[in-house]
Length: 99
Image (cartoon, rainbow, N blue to C red; front, top):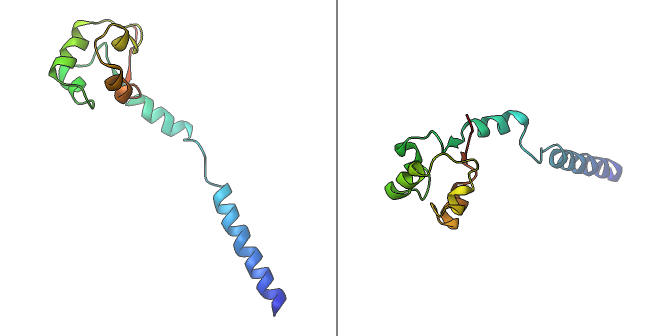
C-alpha cells in the first residue's frame, strides 16, 4: 500500500511539473504579428486615432500632426512634442512608417 501511495504522489508531482514546463514563456509568432498589426502609424494617423492613445490630448495630437513626418517614433520626445512620461506610455502602441 505504501508503494502505491509513493507511485501516485510521484505521478501527481510529474503532472504538475509537466504542466509548468509546458507553459510557453514568450508569445508565439501569431500573437506577435497580431500585436504588430495593431500599431498606430504616427505619420498617417488621424487626430481622433491619436487621441485614443492613453495620455494624448487634443493639444498633443495636433502637435504630433504638425511635426510630421517622423523617421523614428522617439522623435516625439527629441522634438519636444511629447513629454518622456507620455511617450513611455504609448511607445509600444505606435510606429513611424516610411513611404
